[in-house]
Length: 304
Length: 304
Image 1 (cartoon, helix red, strand yellow):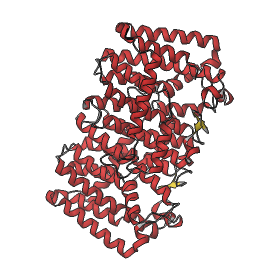
Image 2 (tube, one colour; image 1 turned 90 degrees about the vertical axis):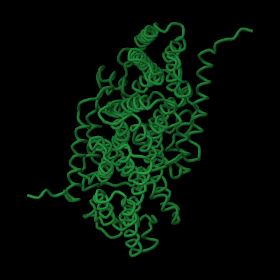
Image 3 (cartoon, rainbow over the protein chains, first blue to last red; image 1 turned 60 degrees about the horizontal axis):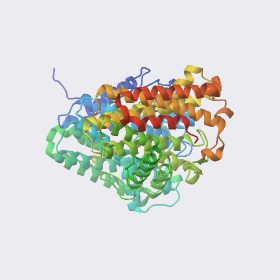
Image 4 (cartoon, rainbow over the protein chains, first blue to last red; image 1 turned 120 degrees about the vertical axis):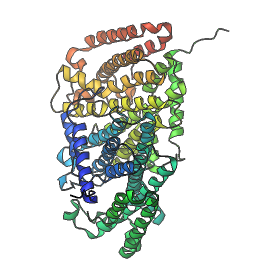
């Protein structure tokens, strides 16, 4: 019987299960050293915000990028789980009434609906904090120099100069529509920074040199742009049932997107171009990088 | 002319100025590597939340504990600034309408009043994230093994098993009053964990052995208990003008405190006992630890 390489879809699903399992274990009731107690209600809200059956695309990128360069998959899985905590915290806070005011996420009540606003704020805060805990933990099999690099890169990607800053620009964009350059900056921060980090983190986990690290970082930037463009297309065309959340909200709020500026045909052509550029960046790695190339195409073509 | 050792008050003020200056510089408009832009409004809210003329007691503890054991004061200052970002983020989020709903902090409008709720949420998120950035930054003159230890200890002190968890217990305490053990746990998490971390962080910065690290950690626990007891006494006795914030709110909300359970005389005796225990822990360091002993007394006797 011939041994088949798992397909992209199989690999993505297998990874999602591994991340869900690890996060479930990390967010169990038993305390770690230095923790006093884990309040049950808060832990429940954190679990609700993070154990949501997501695709775990960001952890997948960490793991596949680390694997490409010969890094430890165990370490990459933990760094991926940390990154997913940051991603999920941002969703919990973005859904709050003072922010995007969403009641439904992945077909489930958002954390502030299932619990309450105060608990959702604290659950988001705790997930963000926990991400750094997971990276620095003795259970993460990496050298201290790698952990420090990961903490620095993650905090820059997530903070005022990255994701949180992008969300602030997004709020401002509801009042005064940004021009094209403004939209590009906003999206590079809000969505792009964490995807860029995911790929760069894989290189850090693998102890890669500056060239490989920069190459995967650039790859992450390309797929970040593709991700946002695909998202904007979806917001325009998909229905709420497919997405598991409210759609058409960006347009309704007058938020500028590149799709709104240039049209659907332009966006589809641009997506193809971004995938081609991402693939070119992977060329030095040959056939080993085929999963990452498929990931880029998956991101460009996703329907939810 | 005889050279005087600066008094405690002078040292505390000098330190507060150094922290304020460093935080002001760190939160300037110029970006660091990996930051895309620093949105002006978000940065303004972060500055409003953190550059508030506080006593900077937590950074003071980091610096004095590091200094006691021969650690770098420059490194301790940066770690202190990081810790202050965590402390201030917690105040920004605690003041939100969904949490304690406070309009005034240190005689100034709270961040969500001076800006808006969404910006206050993001400013808090960004300050928390920035704390880990500051610790991991190449500008912090510490070994990677120290940075990893600091990131781990800080995330455990601040997260679901520490400060944020304590705030969650505090919210629950408004609905069902905890018993004495519950109050002690809540306070150890909400207030104690960061003060414990401050002292332990000084030991980590100094590259201290396990004995010294544990000793300063225990010292931090004692002054954490004293801090909260003094706070509860103040909430009962001080007026809003002295405190620069609303007072008597705990009692009004039916929140249990040890002062409410055991009375003012008991609390004052217990404070003296805690200061004595803290001083005993400092005995091996002799006269060099007099500033830390004064800090313990200051915390127990503070009037705002």
